[in-house]
Structures are given as structure tokens and as C-alpha cells.
Amino acid sequence: MQPTADFDASKLARSLLRRSRQGALATLMPESGDPYCSLVNVASHADASPILLISRLALHTINVLADGRVSLMLDERAAGDPLEGSRIMLAGRAEEATGEPAKILRRRYLNAHPSAEAFVDFKDFSFFRIAPSGLHLVAGFGRIIDLKPAQFLTEIGDAADLLEAEQGAVEHMNEDHRDAMNLYATRLLGAESADWRCTGCDPDGMDMQADSATLRLDFPERVSSAMGLRKMLVRLAGEARAKD
Image 1: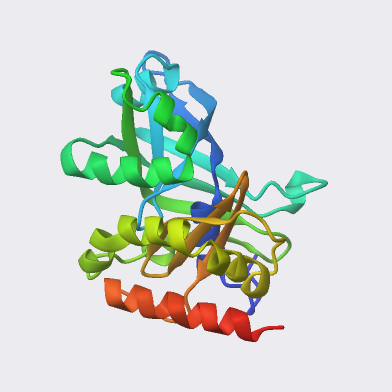
Image 2 (image 1 turned 180 degrees about the vertical axis):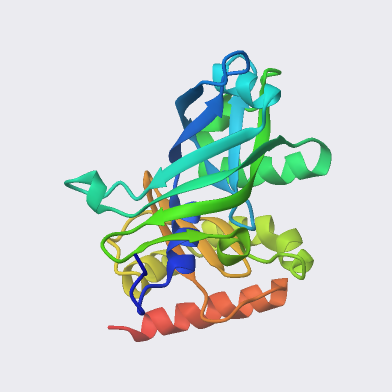
């Protein structure tokens, strides 16, 4: 079935990857090869690939360390019939991170899951990133499609300056500009007023969260530097204030 012409599959897939905080992780049992599925918390890397914080005591981690092939189901948790909501099944390899890459995953994961501060330093916990090989998107009639990584991941090769400044920008927005965060949510994204905070920035947009609710603010143009990010956020704040 071919998707309809007005359907932006890449944008929807990226949005689900950015907004999802829980998913069903499927791994392979090392002895039998049988599939094993478990519920996990997730966050997203700057390129939109999933981040996991999992314990070596958990069966899914034991499976991953024996065979990194995994799949991850994410859905938008639509009210009513969940099968009417959009969902993706992402396939790839779960790769344990160490050194500087682990610090980046830690920062982004804790921004999305601050309660994980309570156990993140336990010796049995490690950060894993799923390097995608592709995904299957189901978003309703005429909206079912397979996508390759290049079609849903965000290019970050030219954005080193932005990513270096990201955490400072997140903290600055949350400490000094919560009013702007609420304006983005209510006037640009049509959400209810809440204690919205920033959880991450990347070349394509900004991630926002209030309790368990999440939003994705897509930028009208790509940004790749700290200055470009600042100008974009000021611009969007002005656009939000202009909407009455």
C-alpha cells in the first residue's frame, strides 16, 4: 500500500523517536534464539536514535550483550483504541557506550528521565544506543511504510558547535525562559499550559516535556551552531507572542 501524497513519513517517524519515553524492546535469548520482549524507558540521541539505560542483571541486557540485534516498538499512546495511533518498529543493534559517548547519552537520558539520577551510577547499569538499520511505520490507512536510517535520522556531522552548547542551552531555557517554553507549547503547538521544560536541542528542533507529556518543536530551518540556535529560539518566541 502506497502512502498518500500529503504524508510526511520521515517527520512523523522522527517525532515518535523524539517524543517517546517508553517502548517495548525485543531481544534474542542466547541459548534458544527465542524472542524476548520487555518494557524499557527510552530517550533519544541528538541524531534521534534511541538511548537505553539498562541493568546487567536484567534478562534483556544479558541477551543484548550476547547478541546486539534488537527491535524497539514505540507508539504515541493515543486515547481510545491504541491501534488507531501511529507507531514504529525500529530494528538495529544495541551498542554499549563508554567514555565520552557515554557521557553524551547520560546527559540526554537524564534530561528526559530525571528520576534516573537515583540509580544511574549503580555499577550494573550502562548506557546503550540503538544503531538503527531501518524502521516500519504504521500511521493509518494509506500510511504504512518502511524507512531507511537516512530517511529518519538527523544529520549531526556539521553540528559540533550546537551539540557542545546544547546542555547550556537546555539549562538556560529551563532556568530563565520557562515563559517562552510555555508559549512555544501553547501558541505554536496547541498544547495545554503546563510547566514545560526543554529536554534537548538538535539541528532539526527542540524536545519539550511536562510531567509525562512530551512535545516536539520542529525548527522551520535547520540550525548547526550555538548562535543559530539562539537566534532560532528568539525568533520562535517572537512568533509565539505574536499569536493572540
